[in-house]
Length: 230
Length: 313
Image (cartoon, rainbow over the protein chains, first blue to last red):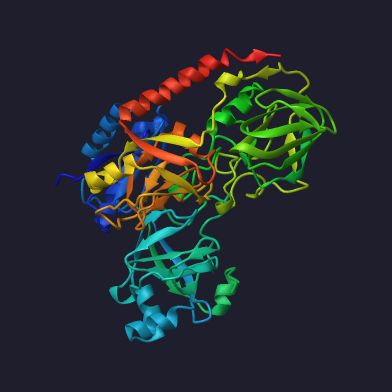
């Protein structure tokens, strides 16, 4: 069992940042996920918020019930218990996607940029099992990685004013489903009919950090049957 | 059950409680009152439990009609308050009766007023909070800002002590602010000359300042690190994008971001910044995390002490 590498840094008056090795790596993501569980249990009612990402955790505590020194020591205790290279405990999720030039306005551009067919773009996007690395930017927006190197595309130089709900998109090494209409600069390749964020529902989101996601192509009729709208 | 009817919402009126905590992992931001100190006094003047739902009215122009007898208090920015056309004092409990019209004019000093009612507005919380975040469509009435015709339910209250916060305890919203900053995040990636430039020069609040964040204008600051893996952003974090102009991220900030941050502004000072309009001059000064903790605890003790100084009318 190797020692987990981390760094504790101040973030604000009642916030500490826990940094692991700064790279996108499933093994680090597993550490983030496990550390979050330990920290939630250890800080319990003193924890105001906890925000996991690719290789960091923001810990926000109640400054009137605890203090920086105590929280710092508790975080160090949690990290002592962490063991590297444990298996992921996430669930496996399949998300249907209607891939087409109608639902994915950037498909053709990706294909021509990479000199492959549109069918190959669609095939490669489904061929990978993606890990949920982080949730943020907007409610229910899950950052999934990593995208096949041949499909990696930079963000648009001018973001679109409106990306539709359910848009399946690629930016660099990441892919995502837009949970609600919003401005966005990612490359759009299809539409997913699954609701990614439903206030009042249990669970609110079909995915959580640490889950594995696979995309499965459906035709337009099936997409509409599943509740999708073009 | 009684209620208030929104006759005119003004520039931007939002229902808020203390904010939405513990939901950041779903991508939900905190929201909450931009000036929590003023919001605190609005509820306190009505003997409400802290975090009772009130209205944050930015810039002014709010008009409400009371349906039933109730009590109100307005705090925060300096804006003329009238009840049935008659001037009424801010930072004071007022009794209102069925049919009374409450009007807030445009703010002359500060930006945001807080209007609380006895018992608080009775709105169903979403994700543990009634705070409205427009970008997320969450909180308030169906995630919206207040609109003419909205009906806001409240408890009928017939008797409350009338209180007033003495003038000397009311916050001052100055044209020059010094924001205390706890260094952190990527602070070490800013060269010492860049940090000196940051602390020695003044910045101006730009028109790009809203509930999400305040963009400032002044000497550009360079960071040796340009892009990083997206990471959690706390309240008051000062982000330095590639143009070098700082952005103080506030209540409705995005939960994750990938720009370098030099540290975070003390919450007490974020509240004052939130009352500042374009052109206000801002200085930063570094404090340690220990000093920040002391400042927070002392401010709480001070607030408790002032609470015992409230004048009964």
